[in-house]
Length: 341
Ligand SMILES: [Zn+2]
Image (cartoon, rainbow, N blue to C red; front, top):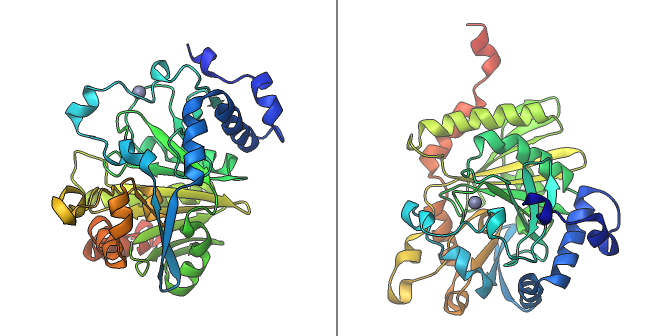
C-alpha cells in the first residue's frame, strides 16, 4: 500500500533543483499542484487572501483571512468525534492523487492542500499512533535540520491545535513567513532572560512578547534534548497527569544551529471561540498563531479583530505568569551542583 504512495524520481524530476530532501519537498509541492485539484485551488486562493498587520512594540502580528482553514479551526477534537471520523492522515484514506516522500521509513512528507504558508506540508507517521512529543522530539530536530534550506518545522500538541490528535504529525512551512522567524534575534537581544549558558549553547525565557516562551539554541543535539527533557519534566509537574502538557513548538535550523521555541499553553481555545453573538471569534490558536500569524477562517472575525483581542487571546491561551516563573526557576537550577551534594 505504502509503495503506491511514494512519489517516483521520474515524477519529481521535472520540478527538481537538487537531490536534497528540502529541494525534493519543494518539488513535491509543484508536482502535486499540477496533478491534484485540491492543492491547485488551495494555493491559488491563498494568493488572494486578505492580510492585515498589527504593530506592537518591536514586533508584529499578522491576521490572515483564510476560509480554507475552517475545517481545521472548527475541528472537533474530543475523543468521540475523533473515533467517529475517518483519519485523514492514514495512508489508506488519502486522496487518490496524493503522493509523498518517505522520510526514514516511518514518516511521509505530504503537501497540505489547505495551506496557511505559501508552501505548507504535513509530515505524518506512516502508522496511526497518537500525537505525543516525548518519543518524537529528536525526530523534530532531525527533520527541521534536513528541511532547513527552505522550511521550519512545527508541532502542535494533541490539545493545542492538532486537528488529528490520534495520528502523529509535524508540519513544515516556508521560512520567514511567520514574523517570529525574523523577530526572534531582536526579541532575544532586547528582552530575553538567559537561564542556561554552556559552550555557545543557551536556554532563554521571554515574557515580553504577549506570549511567554522558552527557547533552546545549540549546534549540539544532546544539549537541546537535555534541556527539552528537563523543561518537559518540570512542566509535567504543573500539568494534569493524564495528558501531555499543553504546548506548541517551532524548530528552526540555521547556520548549523537549532533554535527550538516552546510555547507552554494555558488553554487550547479562548472564550471568544465559544461566545455567542457579537463576541464570537472563531480562532483556534496553534503554533502558527503563536508564531505571529492569526488565522481567521470567517470574514466577520477578520474585519472586527482588534489589537486588544490579540492581547486578550494570548493572555488566555499562553501559560500564566505564575507557572512560567516556576518553569524558569527550575530550568535555571544548576544540575552539576546537585550531583555533588
Ligand atoms: Zn491515522
